Image (cartoon, rainbow, N blue to C red; front, side, top):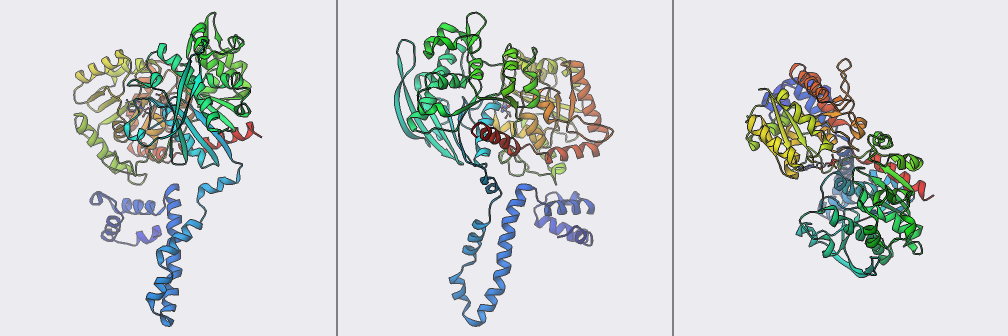
Amino acid sequence: MPKKNYENSTVAELKAIAKEKGIKNISKLKKADLIEALAALDKPAKKEKKAAKKEAVVEEVKVVEEPVVEEVVEEAPAEEVVEEAPAEEVVEEVVEETPAEEEVYFDTPRRSVAFIGSECFPFAKTGGLGDVMYALPKALTKLNCDVKVIMPKYECIKQEYKDKMVYRGSFDMDLCADGRSYYVGIMEYVWDGVVYDFIDNEEFFSGAKPYTTIVDDIPKFCYFGKAALAALNYMDWIPDVIHCHDWQAGLVPVYLRTLFNETPLSRSKVVTTIHNLRFQGVYNIPTIKYWTNLPDYVFNKDALKEGYEDANMLKGGLTYSNAITTVSNTYAQEIQTEFYGEKLDAHLRYHAGKLVGIVNGIDIDIWNTATDALLPANYDITNVLEFKKEDKLALQAELGLDQDENKLMIGLVSRLTDQKGLDLVNAIIPQVMDEFTQIVVLGTGDKVYEESFRNYENQYKGNFAACIQYDEARSHKIYAGADAFLVPSLFEPCGLTQLIAMRYGTVPIVRETGGLKDTVAPYNVHTNEGNGFTFDNYDAGLLLDAINRCKTLYFTNRWCWDEMVQRNMAKDVSWENSAKQYRDLYLELTK
Ligand code: ADP
């Protein structure tokens, strides 16, 4: 209904329509609010528009159909007509014929891509890499890419997923310098247009977690990189592009251009993405030589060699890649400097010509406040101001905090390591805590942070919750229930948590580094623009200042705060744009 028609309606009529449309807590809404909410519902978001487009087709068919049925009724019995062309059948046909939005992209050339990496949601995830390995392939399938994801079949993958895997084949593979060979099993699972191939070897992939100690992880990923390539050859699936992720797949480009040089795979181009430069897979040369049997010449200072006696798996991979990407523009620049370069800055400057930054997105089907089954109250941009409070109250109850919708709740969901700026957080918590403020932390990691957060929970009972655990479901509730979200990282290649927070209408407080800088525009109090509160230097006082600016807006200018909440929810943080950039890179490499 057009907005002006709502304006002509009485409050009672509007309430009746609102009730019909599923808007909750109607009694509290004034006429203007009701009109806004209804008008907004009539203007669906992009994804809903697509569904609406289909519905519109359905409606159109119905509208066209009805008169036809009526006309025919005069000539022939209604039943006959219905039998000949049942409404549902016609509707289905038309819907199928209508080109889906995704199909628009199918006019670009098709490319096949093998993703090789150590984790992928929902099978195994310890951080953002797992999210990207799931969401990017899915987004690429909509851009005319054929994607296979190759990852280890860890013992810790849930049985429900293992049950879905199908045996694809197995073989023995030479690995070590002394000729020792290892079993490689391939288990396959096809889901959502993406093929997942799991490399099976219980000797390497047993244990409760994907990663253990570097002593075990080095042989594990020396084996995995070679097994992934051997599996592609075995399956006779020669992709246009092999896309490697982080140090665990670092040896893939090295193997490809040496031991696999005479195989069909050698015609594939290879891309390496750095998700976090801190982790590089460094170990002494004799051990890596033993586990890979790679030729001596790759252990030179331009490829694998680091310092006098170490080999660096990521460094070797970067050398032999046709292109290097990292997960934000700012991080692509930062890692070429000494401070952020983790000792590879000179190497990256040397390879700068093939280095680009492509910012991550999030999967907006999973991270969808309107449908997220883990939330006590679902909401969208039209009713966030009302229902987000319900999520806050439910979270407060679940965590044993004081139940008060007026308190500012600050969330933090993170691996607990120094990278995440937790030293700054720890230093200022006493100054942040007051009777109007609550903090909820969810994370595991370094004992020093786990302990300090537990201590703060004891000290500020009712207002501070330390959830020292990895809990996907609870993370969703925090993104929805919190008002503000803390990501004050020392460095942050991209960061997904600030993107999820914005999608959930939670205002980020971030340090201006890496992807945080690229995705969170600082709030400008004069123009009322921006997405969150930011600070530049790694300094506890500056973080405190940002939190205080956040508190000031929240408590003294709720109108502008609410606008920022809605602006953030409307911000495009999906994979669509970034996936196109990857697709363009693949096309460029394989012209
Ligand atoms: P990183 O990859 O450096 O850990 P990102 O921000 O890129 O950081 O990604 C972190 C991902 O892991 C997000 O999806 C976040 O929700 C999730 N996450 C981190 N810690 C936890 C936790 N304790 N429980 C549930 N999810 C978590």
